[in-house]
Image (cartoon, rainbow, N blue to C red; front, side):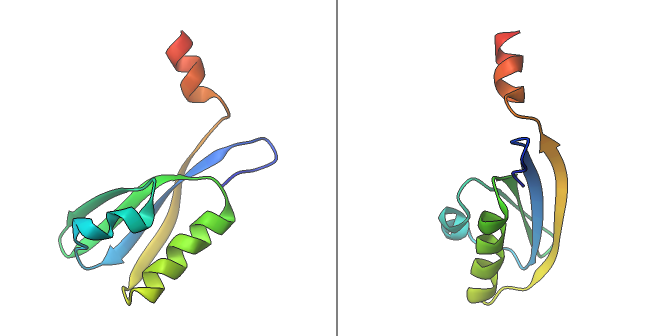
Length: 85
């Protein structure tokens, strides 16, 4: 999540069932992987409102959310600094 220091958090959302690729656009910015009757959405989430939007969308579609986990935080400008080095 975005914090006062400008960090963006990486999240992993696990959904029961294998979602078809056509649902991918509903989870903009997230990578979708399917395996063993689950779908894993993983990607950067800029703030709590965006995370809650993903969770609500999963519920509205009638899918079962198995877990939500923050997997990493990236410091501000970390990708740009690596590109310049």
